[in-house]
Length: 414
Image (cartoon, rainbow, N blue to C red; front, side, top):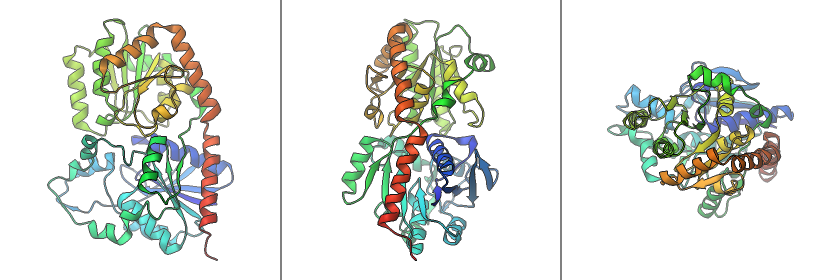
C-alpha cells in the first residue's frame, strides 16, 4: 500500500505526541514493506523536504484566511493549531500517483482538502483524533481562536468548497486514541466506523538512558528526588497546578526538585508559570526547560534522571508520555481524565488524581517518593504493560488492519 500521512505540521523543533505517533507508525509501515510519507504545511519548518528517521517528509506553503492577522498571531496559530489552507498541497495531492489511502491527522480546512481530493480521486481516507474532539474544556478551546480576535475571516467559502464540515462524515474510519473519546465520537457519528487504537512506545529506546548526564547538563542536583513533567507549556498540561502541588509536597519531602519539560505553545501561560515559581520561592527547586530536540537523547535521559513521573493535564485523550515513563521504569502519577483511566489501573501501575486538587496530587507524589516498595511495584507493573501491550509493532499491525478494511469497503477505481 501507498499511504500519505497528513498532519497540520511535522517539525523537530515543536514535537508532540501526534508527531511521535505518525513517525513511529510510519517507520513500522516502511519496515513491513508499505510505502508511506508525511505531507503537511510548512508551518514552523525551515525546509520543505527532509527525511526524519527514514520517513520522507514533504511540506507545502499555506496561509490563514484572515484580514489583519499579525505575524505574532500567525506564529501562535502555527504552534497551537490554526485553521489554515494550502492550495499547493491540494494540487500535489491531486497529482501524486499511486496513492492507495490518505491518513488524516487533523480536521478543519486542511481536513477538508484531504476529503475533497479523496472524493475527486475516489480513494478512501481515515482520520485520527489525537487532541480531543468532544472533550476539550471550553477555556482551552477559546485559546485556539484567541490569536484571530480583531481580524476578519474570509475563509468560510474555502471550507464550504472542500467540505471541511464533512471531514468525519465521509471518512472510511475514525480512529480514536482514547476509549472515552471513542464513545463520544460514536455517539456523534452513530453510522460511522469509529475505532479505538491506542498510542504506543518503543520499549527498547526508553529502557536505557543517562540520567546523571542529564542532571549535570541542566544543573539539577544529583541527590534531589526528581519529579518530571513533560508536555507543552500550555493550560491543557496544567503545570501551574503541578507547581502548587510541589509547594505542598516540600513540607514532607523538603529536598525534592521539579522538572517541567516541554515546548512553549502559550507564551502568556509560560509567563504565569514563571511568576508562580518565583512568587512561591521555588526558583532554586524548579527547572523549566522549554523543549528539547526530539532527535537527541535528552528526552530519554530526562526520564532516567527522574524518580517519579507526573502528568497533571486537565484533559488528555490518551497520554503517550505515560507509556514512555513506564518503558523507562518510572512510577507514574496522572490525572483521572480523558483516556488515561482506560489504560492506567489506579493503585496497580499508576496513581490517579483529580487535576484540580493540588493536595491530592501532592499526596500521590509523597507516596511514590517515600514508599519505595509501592513505587517499585507500580513502576514494574507499568514497565511490563508497556512492553507487552503497547509496542509500536503491535499498534501498527492493528493500523494496517484498519487500512485494509477501508480499502475493502472502498476499492480503488480500475
